[in-house]
Image (cartoon, rainbow, N blue to C red):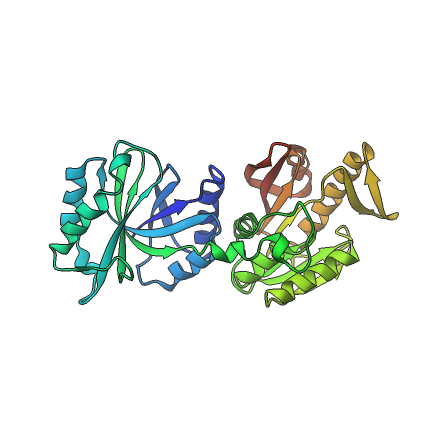
Length: 359
């Protein structure tokens, strides 16, 4: 079937990468057809009734909706009506089903001013096929996805629930620390790691547990580590608040009490900032100002050695740092670089996301 994903506009390519990572994790075969104007269209070996679509919609963080593409046309009103008239609606509409038609604009185009009229025109066309309109609680919702050059006539399969992320914002958790990654981005990091249901997921710098929460929400078994006892206690409190269970331990990231090749996936936000708590063989201490760069560099190198040791061969580690210099040290640690992204948080902070695979 042909699927369309309406992506969020928070990043140019990260939402697309998240979709592909989830499809791979669910072992869905697919082929990309189009990617433009926050819309990704693929051919996937799935049926509209597949339970995997429901699982996919619950995993994704940077997607607004998933659609079954029933036809496409140039931005021409006559052409749009024609694809609706030719569409086999009987394949998706049962006897007694009602419908509504909506328009979604991913890019302002020549039909932007007609975005309110087109659903009425298309609705009338569907009504002539013998179906009943119900704008409040329709059985099926058809959507006109309007891009810069194309209109896709689609059936809405799943809307991603935005509220699930709103309710998990850091300041709403029992334990809070400023500067942490927001839930939608944390979910994307987890998905980029390729973790599957019931697999073991590790965050070796777990902080307040934001990444662990998202991994637990999609069914992974979770384990977190942090060198600070207060962070470990806070993470446990946050996990309990969301009804999640997992192992969270006080541990130096350079000496984690885990067996070799025991972890299925890793995602973590490396320590950064003007002041970072670092742990070396000489003990835990606070590093400030100029020496903190070298301390972080040594920490990153030691942490990558340990991440490589515990990660299973062929599996992924997603590393977030505040400096592109991280890209220059991964090569020494037996990893292959798969993907890299720059995510701008605000004018003084960008996060650099690196997806590595253990060779």
